[in-house]
Length: 106
Image (cartoon, rainbow, N blue to C red; front, side, top):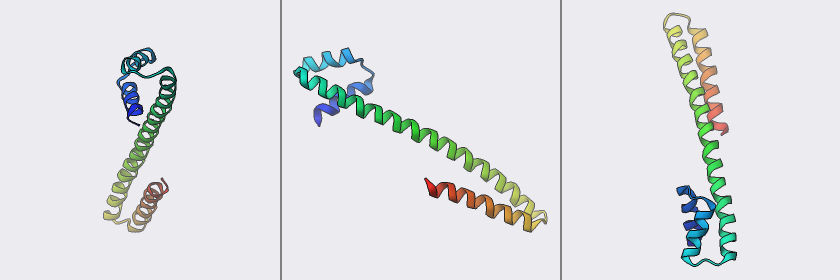
């Protein structure tokens, strides 16, 4: 696994395939190992990139949703303090349950 970690670290540094092959030749890898480790490092590196993109896009949308719900909740709290208690409390309950549902499902 140490060789694979080394190849992945070269991928993360942004080296091209040719540069990685040169590095591997310098380290004494044979041709079969070069093909095998390049293929495995490609798979692992691409999976890491995809997982990072998915998690970033999910966190941005969830953060935006929660921010909007928080602002609406604060407005409904103001409605409660101005005397429209039933409308404000029902609205708060609905919006907070939406936030809880969206957080729990993922």
